[in-house]
Amino acid sequence: MSAFRSDDEFTLTGRAFLARSSKQVSATLRLKGDSVTLLSEDGEKLCTFRRNELKFEAPLGRTDRRATFPDGTLFETPDHETVQRITGNTAGTALHVAERFNSRLIYFVVAAVLGGFLVWRFALPAIVYVAVAFTPEPLKDAMDVGTLQAFDRVIANPTRLSEERQDEVREVFANLISELEDNDSTQFDLHFRFAPGIGPNAVALPGGTVVITDALVSGFPGDDVVAAVLGHELGHVVENHGLTQLYRSLGFFVLVSLIAGDTGPILEDVLLEGGVILSLSYSREFERRADEFGLRLTRKAGYDPAALITFFESLPGSLSQETSWDSTHPSSAERIESIRDFLKES
Image (cartoon, one colour):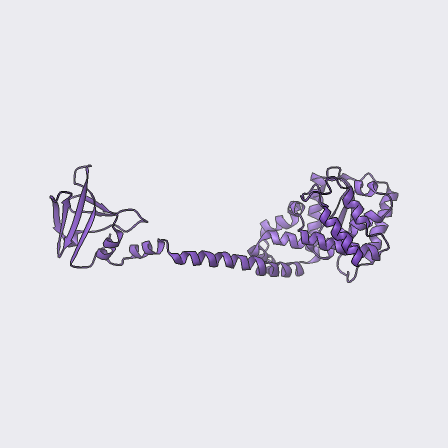
């Protein structure tokens, strides 16, 4: 309830529910001087009382304003403006005004959306860059262990390749690593898995673990295709694509906590459980950069970089634009053409 100021005269139209009656009647409330009179639609005086006995309830949205008279009569009116002139600015009225739609709200919404875009466009990439730079090698190694365990639980089985063939591929892998520049911290490790569900494929993890499937090793004669695919995966590791993609998915405030060292059990589960990394897919930009990195590395190591095109052309649905875990390296006419253009120019 609220008191009101003493203006000369006000008239409010609305409806009344008379005391000891549920009947609704159209009514007019007339306030003049110190007297308040409630009149029916045809001018009949329903009740009168003193001005200081008139109390309006606090406003609630666009709901009609209500006043209860001393005899129990209830009066309701949609005329919020006149009621506010009678009661003056109370705490409830101020809140009601603040809740109204205002054109300034549009500017606020636009500013909020723009602020969110700027955070996403500039602040988030910056904080992701810092988070990647400050991620210790032991944490990357722990991510690899958890992800490899999840991979083995869900997708893969022990390799069926002969030890001789594994050694041949390990030699290719070692030749590629020997051509890497400024690689003093990352310890690369190659694993073989039988995973018919994903076909000829290879997967790079943030800490330097690379998994290659039996189907990829046995599906192509010679070492050029294997070298080209492994070079591509090494590009993802060296340029921290997996870690960057993971941190982008975590969100701004979680990354700030990570950089501050306050990981907590939930964040530790996300980083170490492994399922999150397996569910992520690289952006087109990351795939393009890994392609180019792998092409240069493959050539430096003495293998044919054009074998990467052979690999992509051999995949089922090679002209598809879709990406999924079932086809970690989707090829398309556009992507193959980009590889050809790169090889011509380099």
